Length: 526
Image (cartoon, rainbow, N blue to C red):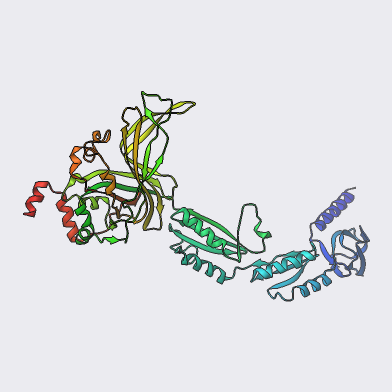
């Protein structure tokens, strides 16, 4: 009994050990020999339609594949030894390999190899045309053929795309991981397989849109969308990940008044001061003919009318005139020191606007008052606020690392009560312009003399009572009918605590003098 148990243990161990061995593979119509560790006395095949077995000797057997499939062969020895062989019969792919090789004969980068009952097509393809041809041929032979080819991006395609972006004034790093590739305002262009990756940061939404236009304009590329599978596209696919530099901009603004004579000498005086004035060759803000238009009617807080009155509005555009625009190579503080050296009180108002780079929203600076009125219609009435006085709006962002591109709207509005009525007539003079200003410098926009000339020198209601504006809108301003309004705009990056552009020694002396008390300045001039 004990001998029987031991024999069964040995048989089970042999069977389990045999099943742990690697299976034997043989193709249809082919044969393979298998060696045995013991003398085989008999054998048995589980599926004789898949495999035939014959003895070549006491310790060697011959396995011949009949058809594709899997079966087992059990070997037995005279001493009670046993072994189980797992046999896999694969299809004969010799003819298949030959046919695929002929079909791919004009693509030298590929090789065709057998892997069991599968045929593998391998290689690195040098063009999209070759890739598309391989895909079509492999698909025609069915799932027994596997396409393992890869696509290598031709370097000249990436070079051409980089050059196209550079010609559009974008900064492009030569390769990913370089010192410049992570800098704001720098793009990178890389390729892998059939994918082209364009990434980086630009300074405005317009620049981001321009990058998309340039990439989409490449005939050999198609821009990837979320719904498309890049592997199903027969062109190189571009993935664009370009963002706008997320910076906060600050725009310092000031309104100052100068005489007509002073206005004519601004350019010469700035040159003499060493502020590197650049004449842009044309007026940004000039005298313009007004356009009359009608708006909604407004009434006082304590008056409700059954019919909407009209509000008169005149808009002025940035027509060419005698006044010019100047670019001053210092920030607003330095520019104000230059203009106030003779008369510090000429600054009407100074303020600051904050907005995110590239934001489409307007930011407003208001120096004046607010008239709370009631807007009435046939159905209802509601309270509204109307701002009046000096109103400046700006929006935009960085054009590049050194220049801000801004849209500026300036308004001077004057409310006056209509005779014999509780309604108000609001006269609005508006000026619109666009400026490109170096970061840290100041743009001087001039020529708004008509805005001042239109003011009643005897005292304009509301405005003459506001501390910031009373000097312009009261009887004290009667001698300023030849004055011009200058608007000073100075953009800089909110996180940039660096100093403004250097100025000459002569200008430094002017700035130093402007900071002295008036009595000392007069004594120094003597």
